[in-house]
Amino acid sequence: MERILGSYRMVLGVAAVVAAMPAQAQQKPAPQSPAAACVALARAALGDDVQITATTLVAPAAAGKTPLPFGGSLKVALPQYCKVAGVIAPRKGVGGRDYGIGFEIALPSNWNGRFLLQGGGGLNGSIRAPLGVEAVGDDSALARGFAVASHDSGHKGAVFDGSFREDQRAALDFAEASVRTVTVAAKAITTRYYRKAIAHSYMAGCSTGGRETMLAMQRYPEMFDGVVIGAPAMRTGFSNLGTGYAKVMFNQSAPRDAQGKALPERNFTTADRQAIKAGLLQQCDALDGLADGMIMNVAQCRFRPAALQCAGEKQDGCLSAAQVGSLERAFAGPKDASGRALYAPVPYDTGIVDVAGPVSGYIVDGRTDILGPPNREVTIDLDAQAAAIRADWMQRLTDTDSWTNLSTYLGKGGKVLFYHGVSDAWFSAFDTLDYWRRAGEANGAGWADASRFYMVPGMGHCAGGDAFDSFDMLGAVVDWVEQGKAPEAVVAHRTKPAPAARPLCPYPSYARFKGGDPSAPENFQCTAPTGETL
Image 1: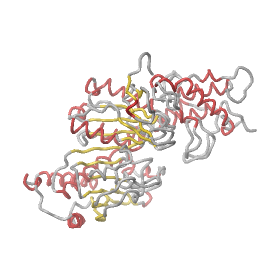
Image 2: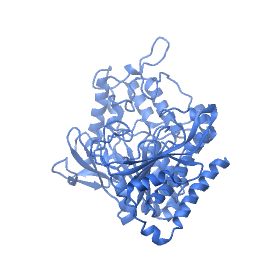
Image 3: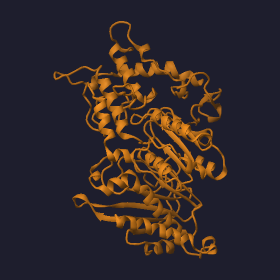
Image 4: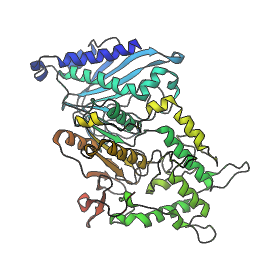
């Protein structure tokens, strides 16, 4: 522990030394070529526990030449930058495995004075390229001139490999400590490289990265000026309980095998899925003034599965009474024996019937996918599972859904944008909305002056789906922090089935069609719903 604390003191010391430089040295650093500065950084003495393992001056890259973590390539050109690789507090841990917080920093030659920490994904375990591609549309924070840092949260492993939890320090680093440790070190290195202070600091992430960004805002409120939080994995024990419960509810209307196990692959046929989507659109699509297959007015969509029930025997185009019941129970969310909700309801949206991706929409199709084999159970003990979740010490430290006192973050002028895909099959957009509302109740009028929440209709987990899923939230929060321009509509784009753009509006408002070309964003207006909302 003393070694870890020593690393914290060291990186804070580096930052203090730089901050103590004479004002002239900070404002007018001695001329130094990027190549020389990058080489010098490799030789920098940062203490025993923060080790720079490599520095490379990376040449500019044309658009389409930089691979992205999940396939494809970056659509914009990248400038020349110094790539710094390192590790904090390397050590041998449980099982003789190598541990330590691996990190990378991209320091562009055309630095704009801003710093960005990018969030991770899954259970981390690898360092994603420090490009800053979350919530920037087809752009990159690095291309815009940000210094960008990325890290593995303290262990190496596959994205859903949880074996690192056996090691206490690795578990603590993943749960919360790595965010602060890397930020302090990366800021110190950035300041040392440029020989001037960072003007503004930001963080952005989705899923686990969203949770990490929430964590930074809640537990380290002085570190960032603005944050963007996407579909946060803020209480995975109970969100997993929610999806597990939904699968069991669906299984209750599925055919059974000889052992009484459900056959979910035979539950909702292609015709059933088409009927569900058609019925959903019939009830909710035109609420935004345009029947185009997109449910923009999320706050007033009240889909009633019972309207699709067959009048007589089951046939294509309608649902059985058992199927209707399973839909209603699954989307309502699990409750304990006293009737208290254990997880949020799930919104009805167009992506719930999807079977094309690596993970099906919320209405499961019985495939083995990246989450594991299909659930075939027809009963679930919710109270027992909830008790186990509450008893998990690491889960409680990792979760970010409870803390709503943001007085320090808001008091220093911090801004936050939330976004969530309405068709997210992993985490309910209504759960994130619930946190946003509770934070509003806890922080009063200051919350309305510092936060916005954006629903993204049709979008799955962080991206994808039949959605306008390319949008620049980072630019919006930067303008809010630095220019005082509070965001309203954020224009979002898509390329399929044809190029089009549409505004995303702060919840509960929605993009209402005014007339004209529906592919043009100026033909929509953010409109507050009238009457009752969800």
